Image (cartoon, helix red, strand yellow):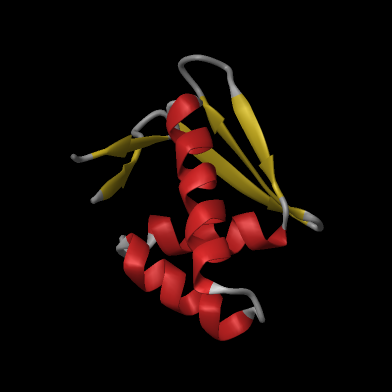
Length: 86
């Protein structure tokens, strides 16, 4: 399960969103797809559900979706914007 960090704040822009950590000052800019994923995570959805939603919206293989989503989650974790329960 993924939890949004208590230190994470975000806002929408015309091109996507910006998510920042108020403790570290680190931030990441998200494109529209990244923003869609972020909104799914803030809603408490499991990664498998997020994958399903992405597969329904984009003509991309499941393996590509999974690899890109894993990379995205790693980046959010690196910036301490999410917490991973393992």
